[in-house]
Length: 240
Ligand code: ZN
Image 1 (cartoon, rainbow, N blue to C red):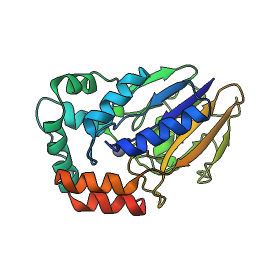
Image 2: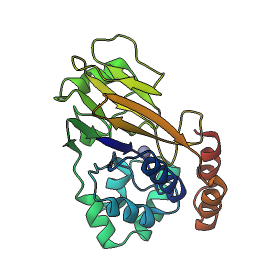
Image 3: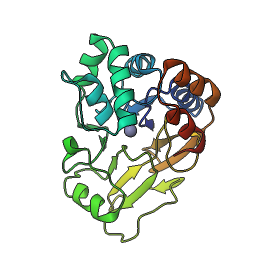
Image 4: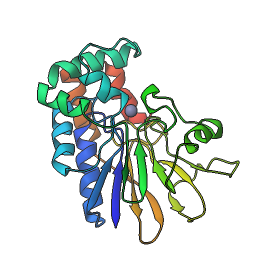
């Protein structure tokens, strides 16, 4: 099976649609979403609707939680907080209910998905090094787990002391455990503005990353028109 696995859409509709079209052209029939469908960019409703239409496994991200919980959050930085407040006003009760009901982690086929970490998924920790990954591996029961949250592609292999930063191709060996982040669709932070996602080909034990161009100017224009912080439009262009 060929799974298209994508994360951190962050209400960037143009990037989401470009990724879905690319995945379909590459013969993916199954989709998997690692959370943070909303937050930061200007199309939260449309992105929730597109992802729902896929009728695919989805886990909850911290922005999904903040945008949908009954009491407004107070633990984000100022710019994220402004975007969350704006997003909360845009989403309908139905959208919020769907976001609230998402699980923190789940199993799909023979792999696991989570937004942040498997050890304490509700605390939204960031995995940037082997120590962080080791805590999560303790709870990983499947060969492969995909995660998001950092917006930076990285692959951790248990019992390998070096984190892999070359993530274009990952060959899955059955005796090893993999904790894989393939970056963000809607707000990449690895210096590359193009939307990131991966395809997991379970027959051939191969995970491949793809980068997809989208109409960046259209997204930036929508951010400006929505009155969202200008920095959110600027960072998209530099992938930070
Ligand atoms: Zn995110």
